[in-house]
Length: 172
Length: 386
Image (cartoon, rainbow over the protein chains, first blue to last red):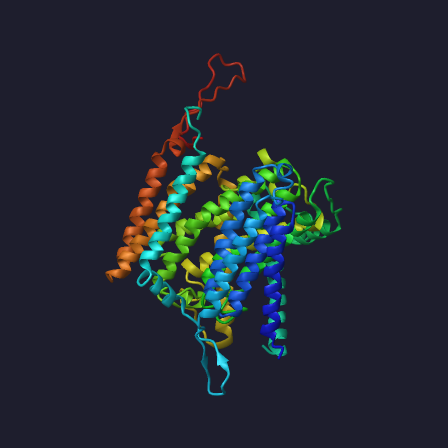
């Protein structure tokens, strides 16, 4: 049965796949970054269809906003002509294997995870939305340690970046 | 969703678009008049009574103007950029209420939606800057991105402190929470952070370095003309209106505070008018700042954002958290907030780069035949040292 949400799901999935293909197929690396944004928006759309509004908005804010912008920022400081054939990397078979492995892992864990749904009186499946305050509470109580570890990793990356770009010697 | 619902939403979106376009026309006129009064000019006077029809004439001129595509521009990116700026600014208004139930979608996560969507504007500015194949545009786009990403943090934090007070991200709930007192009375520091970061998000003076006329000529939009430039312009004014509306909703009590007389239809009409009046007051304040302050340099802008606003916004969150956690009365928050605000202004006034100094100017007049030039008494005057 074709329901509106099914149509919307296929639209979001097409957006995600098209964007993803665009990232790897295009020769122009700035186009690749824009295509990444399209793919991220598609993923946000899929989240939205699964009634995970909070996750969808996080997707838009973090990936669509911050990360793609930072990637573009870095790219635009370089000259695009210098990277004409950046996508033609000789290591692509290894990358393909790694990507396939990650896809397998994600697919397996997605299939293995049960989705919380309930059925209403008429027998139809209805949403059981996770309230965002419940999400926050579990993140900061039950999962506080992994959360802090993640922020620590980010902090290390941040300091590492500062150390890397700092010019050695007293030129500045 | 049924077809009727779809039509209902489409009509609502259309009404919103018309409303916002009208507001932009009014705003351009108000801005030109306000700036003119500040500079002791008359402003537009030719078209209509006191230039009231000037925005229409301008709009017509822009639409009829030739649309230029630079020969080195990246065609697709160049044409998509105005839309990438305009659509997020329009999408924001889907969740902003102008009165009780006068909103397209009353989202539970309204505030978070606003934060998430507003970031997308940067993408359009970067696209415009890169796609134009112009050094000025490119630099403008990069500056805009750097500025917006930096000031996004205090902006979100200031919003978060308000959300902590109400324990909700729903804009109507936030307005309802202010039925007895507006949050400006509890969070003056939050309002300061929000408005400052909001000005930076808008790219308005004193934070308009991404289209600083004296160095970048026109910033990311330099190559655009005609209708495509008009779309950027429209988005910019819609965003200004958005910041004004958000300030009113979050800090000035929305349509609820102070309480309105009457019931029923008269009440809702009055509340919309009250909301719009407050919004225009905030926007006039923004125009006033534009007419008064010089532009910050890019290093000053970054230093101000990262060294002052970001730490301050975190302090704001912490004090709000402490007061709420220990259940202290809210006036203690007001007190702490005011003390911190005072300390901030004191620190700015003592800081090397921004210190206020008295300057005395002696003017000699050599006109006339008197042997001794009359000396004009030195006028104490505060000047902003660069």
